[in-house]
Length: 127
Image (tube, rainbow, N blue to C red; front, side):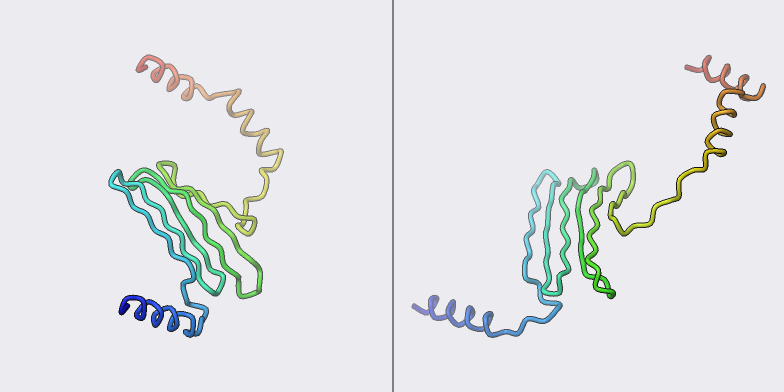
């Protein structure tokens, strides 16, 4: 009977508590003995983040929030031996490589210098 009364009191307090922007509305976490893990957190302010992965090997996750300008921001990422690779429509991207530069690169690859040819010969013998 006391447990039921205590549960009802705790539930009443939880429902009566005001929710501010920092209040965590969802928290899920999992960690296994093989090193795999996962978590997901959401706040009343709209901030959400989560990740799952294998400790020391790699991880995939995402986070989202509302920018000060009111724009929803969502970023997904992958991190492993190839580094951290975020993806989002709001991340800046490099401009395309001009055609003249691409032609120069092709020319250099098609017309190696004598030093480059000598280096290729040495490397071929090492393999």
